[in-house]
Amino acid sequence: MTEPEFFQTWEVSETSQVFWDGSAAEARYLVKWGYDCICKSEICHRVVQVFDFQHGSLFERNISLSTTSVLAAIHQRLDQPWCRLVTIVGRREGGKARLAAEAARQREGRYADGVHRIALTGFPASAAEPAQEIAARIAAGLGLALPSTGKPLAGLLARLKEERMLLVLLDFPQAMAGVDAVLAILQCCAGVQLLVTSEQALHLRAEWLIPWDGN
Image 1 (spheres, rainbow, N blue to C red):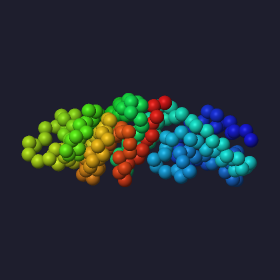
Image 2: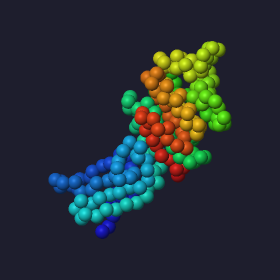
Image 3: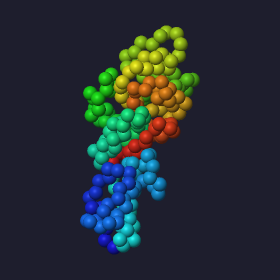
Image 4: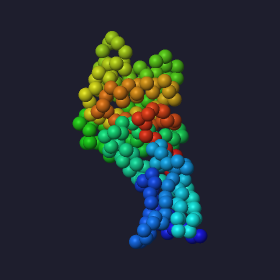
């Protein structure tokens, strides 16, 4: 069987899609990608499958998604009020930070309290309290003076509680205990959205993953 013509140049824009052929009463093609199960974490995976109902044929191919397509996927998520956390996941020095920076630039002007990029590079692996260290880094990046007494995270949450902003955390450290800082922001600061880059998922319920391989 010959591949459908649209499969040659088609760009992915939905997690799954059914195509109807002309006025036919039944669907002609089922298109999906990711793995066998379509779920929220697989929007940008590269394996695409097309099933031709009419001929019972399955086509499969790897498609490199363009930066434009992946940026569109990021905006599609962040445009939803129920989306609080998007994580761009990929290998080290694979261009995740550049992708997030461009997404942040494109979203400027959409938040009452702005879009803020915070670099977490050079995070000390030996940090005794990673969540507190991350909170202190975020506060410094935002130019916030926290109280001299108490924990940095508590002070940061108090300052962000009423804010409406996009917080972009670049190069989230592998000290995954620091995820507690992200979770606290999600729970206490309803007006803050987070866009994070990391080598691995944060494994939080609110998280939407955008895989990126640098192509």
